Amino acid sequence: MRSFLAQSWQIYRKDMVVEYRTRERVVTMFVFSLIVVIIFNFAFNAGADVIQRVVPGMIWVAFAFAGMLSASRSFSPEKDRGTFEGLLLAPVDRGSIFLGKLMGNVTLIGLVQLAVLPLFVLFFNMTILPYLSKLLVIFFLGTVGFSSVATLFAAVAVNTRMRDVMLPVLLLPVASPVLIALVETTRGTLEGGDWQDMTNWIRLLSVFTVVFLVASVLLFEYIVEE
Amino acid sequence: MAGFAARLRITPFGLICLIGLVASLYLSLIWAPRERVMGDVQRIMYFHVASAWLAEFAFVLVGVSSVIYLWLRERRWDIVAYSAAEVGFVFCCFVMITGPIWGKPVWGTWWTWDPRLTFSMILWLIYVAYLMLRVYGDDMPQVKTFLAVLGILGTIDIPFIHFATMWWRGLHPDSLVMTEEGLGAGMEVDMRIALGVSAVVFTLFFFYLMQRRMALERLRDETESLRERLEHRHPGSLGA
Image 1 (cartoon, chains in turn purple, blue):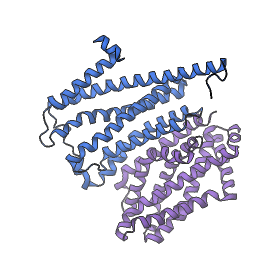
Image 2 (cartoon, helix red, strand yellow):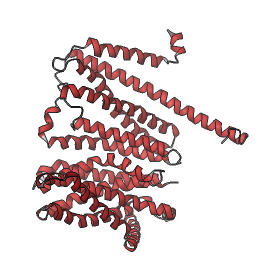
Image 3 (spheres, one colour):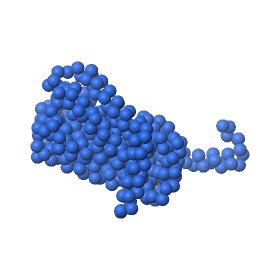
Image 4 (cartoon, chains in turn green, cyan):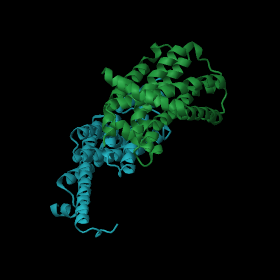
């Protein structure tokens, strides 16, 4: 178990070093989320009261797409450069490759969330400071759950002819329960709700995250075998 | 009768399905009493509910055969999963078509984001994803594994979608008026019989279609291997 985590950590570190040197993914994800926010603003062209109701949805549409970008880019350059074969030849458990990639995706989405949330506050005059600790728990759970499925399906999609189209088609229907739960808990929190009001959703988020994390680690092995 | 059936290439099982479907049509459309409030349009429910059950059952079948496929790696389990997905998709489409036809006169709207409608919509999209992956990935050797993975994840997802769509609407009581369809416990005995017969007949029909679809897939495999053997023995004889 310890070596499994140590191997995942090495994969994670490798990806983060690559990302630190190029900063490709974080920058594109950030700009992409920013554009989504601005386009949504045009799309709704709404007053403050309506904005308060749609902001949780906007937040998660932006982050879901940023998450897909991150997941997809965690495999496609490796595939194109042929380094993925090298990774598979490394004497590590296949599950640890998945876990390393997943941790990378969660880290990058987390960074983008940290950068974009203040912009939501700025543009839409939201109050988030009193709810920060609750939001942190919700965002972490949801991002891990969403990214597990996203990372797994990105590994599938990268092998198909229509890789850029296939990822959303495969991922979004399966991830829809977690997206619904995220929007509902985010809305509940921003409206000043307690944990008690959201027990069902938090339970759904946690169970989804655990179940799909375990399932993805187990199934990844089948996906990458030649 | 037997000669007629043989000429149309209907198996005895197919004949049973055909008779059952006719009987079920009679029971649902003529024999069952007319619903007092909704009128004749309510009769679509007998087919709608029966297909909805099969749309969900078929995906569980996809999931179970996908697990067996990953375990045993036998092509026949992949065939079961694929056929279940295709036939299940047809039933799911039927649910999506009959729902609005019933909804428009009864609810006054073609579509509403009621939990069950939302659930069917997401299930339908998962079917679409499965079939798209099959079509766009057919040139890859690992596509069967990918499909099995999607089948398993989709099946695990079904309870989550159920709860998510239920609670999602539960938080908006203003739309709850529309979820009470007046079908459940208040149903007359005759209606329940008609629905029961319809569910049984549709299930038989589902397995009949599965059987035909699986036979077709096996024929394809056979054609493919014959083609390869011919190509091996007389290179170039089949053109490109």
